[in-house]
Amino acid sequence: MALLCRSGGMVDAPDSKSGELWFVRVRVSPSAPLNDLAKLRVFMVQFDLERLLSIGSISPSSSFLAKEMIKYSKNLPANARILEIGAGRGPITKFLVKELKSSQKLDVVELMPEFCQSLQKYFSNKPLVTIYCCDILEFDIHKKYDLVICSLPFNSMDPEITKRVMALLPSMLNKSGIFSFFEYSFTQKIFYYLLRGKNLERYKKARSLVKNFVKQYEFEHTNIYANIPPAVVRFLRFN
Ligand SMILES: C[S@@+](CC[C@H](N)C(=O)[O-])C[C@H]1O[C@@H](n2cnc3c(N)ncnc32)[C@H](O)[C@@H]1O
Image (cartoon, rainbow, N blue to C red):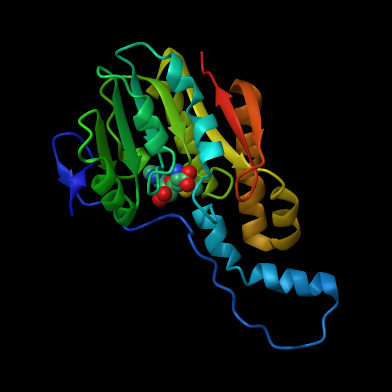
């Protein structure tokens, strides 16, 4: 199914550059004698770490995480415009939709065609919601948003893409607009231990971009333990 991408054109979403992991592949390792730590490492590596890194998640966000991510949607003006980036199959979208008032608009951008189809299925009967199946870097913005809710896995994406998205975000929001995103907690040490070579360099670069971004713009954050893995939801303003 072709879904709207750039305004004025019907475009198929590109092949997945990054996506979402809803299952974990574990391969059986050769039964060489290993100490416990080494066993753990082999097990973790066999979670197909490279794929986890490029994809960024092992399960959909919990309702606790979703509700925190959207909490600022409750106080928005009657005609507010909201953007959700990286909706997956919509675990956050469904809470956002419940909060929408009749003159508010929600635009949802998702890269993976298969997730776009689910979104289309669940939300096509909601006139206030428009699904755009495309890369956020290709998305045309007509009018700035009051709230941007983002689930992109900044820490595990290609740092060049993370950098480009971060550079774009301030131009998407109104002066008083709020940006929310989440990062997984407690995963950094694991990644530093498990990653090697190019992957480690890539991860370090992405981490440093995220840290600077947060340091510059964050005004609030909340830890959410009821999520797999636990996460921290961050709220930023760019003015
Ligand atoms: C970590 S998942 C989050 C999914 C869902 N919002 C949740 O909270 O469970 C990230 C989502 O971002 C999408 N994504 C990744 N890169 C993207 C991009 N450049 N533009 C739009 N969506 C993207 C992926 O396809 C995936 O569905």
